[in-house]
Amino acid sequence: MATERDTPTAAGERVIESFGRVSRTADRVFRALLLVATLLGIVALAILLVYVANDAIRPLTADPAWHLTFFLTLVVPTIAVGGYLYRFDAESFQFGTITVGMLAVSSMFAAGAAMIFVDIVAPVVWFAFVLAFGTAFAGIVTLSRFSHRIPFLARFLASGAFLVGSVLFVPDAVQSLPVYPSDWVMLTASLALPLAVVVGRYVAADTGWRGTVLAAGIGLGVVVLATNIGPLVGITPVPALVMTVMSVVPTGGYVAGRVRRHPELRPGLALAAAVLGGALVGAAAVDALGFAGPQAWVDWQFLTSAHNNTAAEAGLYPAIGGSILLMVTVAAISFPVGVGAAVYLEEYAPNNRLTRTIDVNISNLAGVPSVVYGLLGLGVFTRYLGQPRGTVLVGGATLALLILPIVIISAREALRGVPDEMRQASYGMGATRWQTVRNVVLPEAFPAILTGTILALGRAIGETAPLLMIGAPSVLYALPTDFSSKTGAMPLQVYAWASNYATPEFHNKAVPAGVVVLLVVLLSMNSIAIVLRNKYQRDH
Image 1 (cartoon, rainbow, N blue to C red):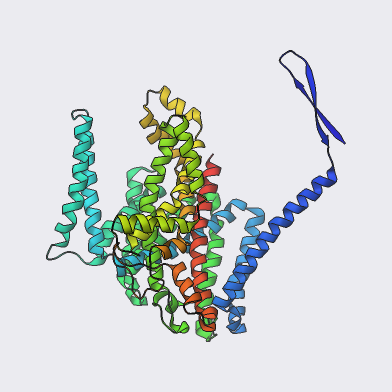
Image 2 (cartoon, helix red, strand yellow; image 1 turned 90 degrees about the horizontal axis):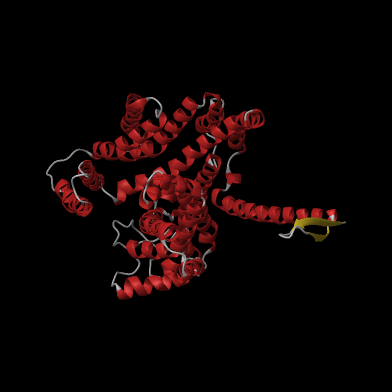
């Protein structure tokens, strides 16, 4: 059948526009084709993940009684509690799911942070730089209290002097002391205490400073308790402290804050208890009964060992540390530069031929092959700037160039999503453009900016070609200790196992295990981005 639409003109006449013949059959066929395409993509990805995970984890090598034990202690209670909540209390189900996912993902990233404090950055160095930035911040805040008496230029120069002077002199002064506190005490003061205050503020945001202090004190007490209990179960104080600070305390603060504000979500804790309790009970049961688990290649030895010529003894530990340092460097370079460029192009730049040319080039640069960025990094950083090949700094800078267009584009889209009415309201109250951007636009767009940045970092952590072009070693036997050290990465290590050590033993053992670890890291980063995006959309 044909469909027509009446369109009025300026002269008052009516023009009939025809949409042509509409067929319900064509609509159903088109919908079915879309569904088939979606299912094909999901099924293909699922088959790939199952195939790789089966080679790496080898679940069929476990005793049948091991599977039965975890089925009864973990799977059955989780399905029962989760199915009930999903059907009758969807919000509590979502709360419980986020709690379990947050604990799992934060534990993984906390393990990476513990690796940094144990093998890469000494706690005294961290404490010294935290103290330096804290000193600079205190000086800048003190200057701001007298801002009405000091000209802007003088205040700006004094703030810069505070920052540079603190960074240059305070760390050396602290590290030159003949005696300083133990590692866990310095980490408690410089890492646990600030994070406990932030979490306590979230938990007790509506009760004033007394509630914040109480909540922060509870979090700090948990950290101190875990630090002293850790050695009893074979975990040294520093890893125990870092794991607790970056995993247990944030998750517990999230749960406490949500339950305080929304008591109706408490049933969701039953789902978290079913998952965590079932896993612990199952692990204790199979250990007591002596049931053998899967003979997986992804085990503690694989995660904590360096490369070996034997696949059964090969490990990914130095590559994991290299990837962590690369991501820190990439984030430190690409985030401020990308967000700054996006703010200028959206909020300050005029709409002329030059800015339109820049827009087109940024979009084109986002599609340039990664090997081209590797050549760019090789030419700029190693040949013209004289930096050593394959270091953390050169690799991070090259990967930062790779994702910089993506960060700029995603940040600009986030800034465009801020309603113009909010800007106009700020201008109407007498705010300047800078005050509007700082106090209105950026806070509103920050979740979406962070989401885009995390997705861009997920692309960078999986890249291999740029690192090969700048001369990064495919195989690394020790962790990089600073930004001038040679660095490897997880994709490079897997590539080396699949090419330089092209034997059936490596193909069937080390390669699947490395791929699974890399996929877990990528999916965890993407899950954080998805949660932030969904929360941002719900808030709007």
